[in-house]
Length: 340
Ligand code: AMP
Ligand code: TRP
Image (cartoon, rainbow, N blue to C red; front, side, top):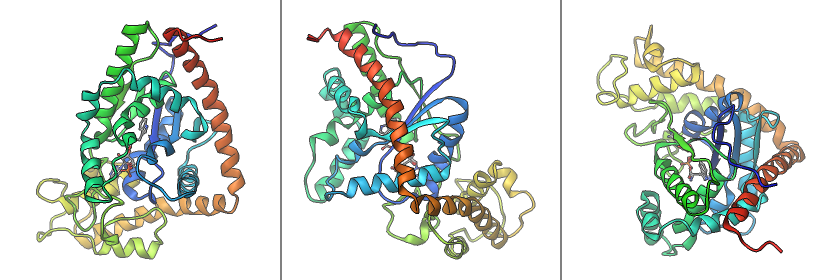
């Protein structure tokens, strides 16, 4: 028996993915990964290390697997719990690549050409080694497959991914109207205001792994001394007042956002009782050290036991495969391919 799409599930179904490229920083943590940890209690959550997406830019042999293991280790350390969510590596569930092909057939060339991320990455590739893979172009069809394979209702992503979720909805609707009700139509859930962590040295830019100066980024693996030093040197402004005002005071506001996010309060509430920039920097550094220290301890424990990380991921693969097989069978059934 082929299943039907559950259009009103009892709990929200959440899917999100992250590429295994580069070390995690405080922006990833506060903007995305900690949100995943809270999602696993509220919803039926599926999270994925999207290694197939990362292959759209060239990699050395073996690099992708190593990066996936590191990222998974970090995310388990941050708090993903295999008993509460399904967490796995994309290439271990072949239905992702299979459905990606089918989604390419219901996605228009013109739609893919309009994707902002493609235009940006294409520009970067052109100024780099000049190789633009076809995968970079069809990337959103693979992302649509990721989302649709789990009858997902909600997709927590950063604002840069909203356009890809919109394309997913359009392609899913197109499939449904051509072949009959098959996919649940998902919705992007964008981060709360203030979930954007800025570079400590250039507070008008997003904290990003592609930034040149290490001083602007807090890495998940930074020592307490390094964290304290980076906050001490953070760019503020020539005034002295501690006040949350992103337009007029981007540096100070970034510190208040970080302090607030790390201590579970609004940036305005975090400002209460802090008079001097020096005190704000010290308080923020302390809160971030307190947030990262237990995570670093769990990373060290898991690194000492890579078999445990693989065991947890294998469990995720098994559970994801069960759901993905069900939806993929539905897709073949609706398409009416010959199933001898
Ligand atoms: P990236 O590192 O750009 O591949 O992003 C991985 C995830 O972290 C995405 O969900 C981003 O939206 C989020 N993210 C990356 N940088 C930041 C930042 N500076 N502030 C908030 N969220 C971020
Ligand atoms: N494209 C996303 C990014 O670069 C990662 C991603 C792949 C994703 N598949 C997804 C996010 C499905 C949400 C849902 O950040």
